[in-house]
Image 1 (cartoon, one colour):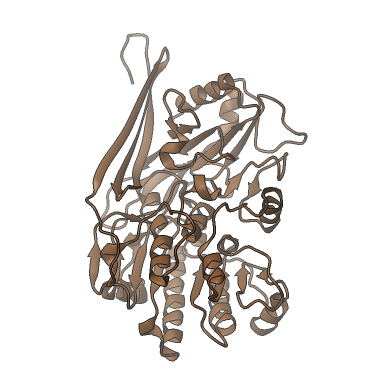
Image 2 (cartoon, rainbow, N blue to C red):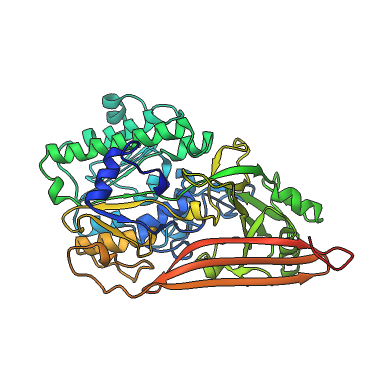
Length: 488
């Protein structure tokens, strides 16, 4: 959900909540601006290099040596926890901390990302249920749920069936006897329809309207139970959205440069072979053996592609930023990450259209929707808060981000995390006391690398509050040298 699609006409419930509570008008997604990355950020309060979820799709050879994995897939999660001693997500989630303190939780997702909020196995009589788009924890809940609500609907665009079912699962089933202290409801819209039809399409607008109706259903249930005025509500999206301008193929680019790059292998790749994992607006490139020479060849090839926006490497190869610059320097990180370039496609009175290159999702075409870049429409997402602990009628221009949601939630619930978090407490929005908010600092990083064939430039813009960095945008460009000594 992009904040520029909130209106009294399209989203009357959310618009009213925004006007009555706190609207975080300068809110930010974490990069990569994808669902699983921000699902983990919204459940842990730390960036990917600490929680371990770096993309929707990654290459983890210890889990599958031949192909990429979905980081939210149940089998991958269970295998990852087994191999890491329960540290697939490397820090506790909010749900786990609430349960450890003796509180009850309920997590429901129309998408599998809900599993990243509360994934651990539990006994059949657990009072902390989870629904993650087709399965439950504990497992024995599934039969009773589907008997009462019917089977989980097939996907559609707009995906109203699944979002309505998920909302009923929370309100009619998980909230049936008693409201837990902490609940999560993750809807699939407008992500689903924007992917298939593009931001602003009739299908996407219908998905947004249905999501607003689901929010209205939650508020109505809180009113019916007489607890709305005692309940803190945060409405947050995982990321924003852009439009597919064209499709790309990083693996083919690297093969043209003489490298053995594939997206799937039939036998385990060997030293200097390359696994390419497309994530829409960003691509992860893994070099088997991590040869500096091969990594440099990958970088050089990508710097000369018009579809490349910003390049990141673990060691900061010339003409790239180090992974640590965007909090991605985890042990399982790719050797090279490239965010696709983006451009504003015309100016109109309505929501901005930004075109990006789509990698690894061949079902989407020009005009459909995509994200995961460093475009401003991917990075700026929605956040609204309402409740007894939040101020009323406030528009906050202070930069904030998804990484701040968990520190704020734990502060409100009086739970001290076992180790410091990466986000900050959103004190500017609270009626209760919190850490003081310092001034906003602006930052920018630029790199330039000159080659015989041309010049590569890339930049990254960000703001910082209380030591927390929020990415504003990033892009790059290749200028080809011509024989006369000029550039084009």
